[in-house]
Length: 297
Figure 1 (cartoon, rainbow, N blue to C red):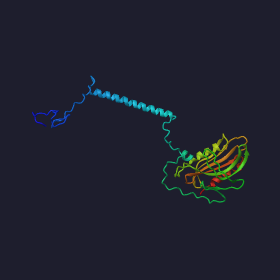
Figure 2 (tube, rainbow, N blue to C red; figure 1 turned 120 degrees about the vertical axis):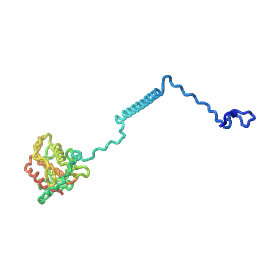
Figure 3 (spheres, one colour; figure 1 turned 45 degrees about the vertical axis):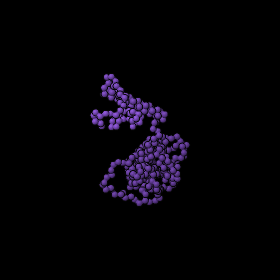
């Protein structure tokens, strides 16, 4: 910085100066910076807060317009996708549990910690037996007119696969053959590794399926016994009943039947179905006889 009163070298030089032509500055003097453009004058009558409020209104209007455009786009996409704008997303997996497991969840009560009752002493097995390895039970086998069941019957809504047992034809009619039967099957009735079955619920579902699908409609039910019991030392649900019906061409007008669902300690329950048409009531004793003969494998 020069001291006050010192002569200032002009911003231009004479031709005989040591500086060449062009804009130059004297030594030690800051360059002259031209002033910037003047700030635009504020609108008359508008101070700082008023200007801020006006800017916020402008920004709000712009944001609202963006939201409105977005809603219009979503609506267009939805209409062009048959009402499902997100159909490209994978749908939730369907319930793949067995039908009876869906209808009858396992009991939620906590088992008692008290010692269980001693196992029931059962009489020894005698005579010929029908053995159903898949169901996990065996039961008494009978001679003529009973013959071995040699097919797979998936009757009813639940499509229980009856593969093992005995039967004989009681009559032929316009609807086909009518049978007396002793059939067994295994039916999935629990989730995954659960072995606790809601036997009461499962048994009622199977019984309702039998009545609705295996007999002429309409029919009336005469209950003989219904509820929880023990078969072969295992917990079981038992429904014994007589159905009354009238079907054109069929001589049988009623039938005595029993449905037993037995907990064999697996995720499947054993189902035992016995039916004796009213035309052959001399075989009604078979129902109690077979039920008493049940043994778990």
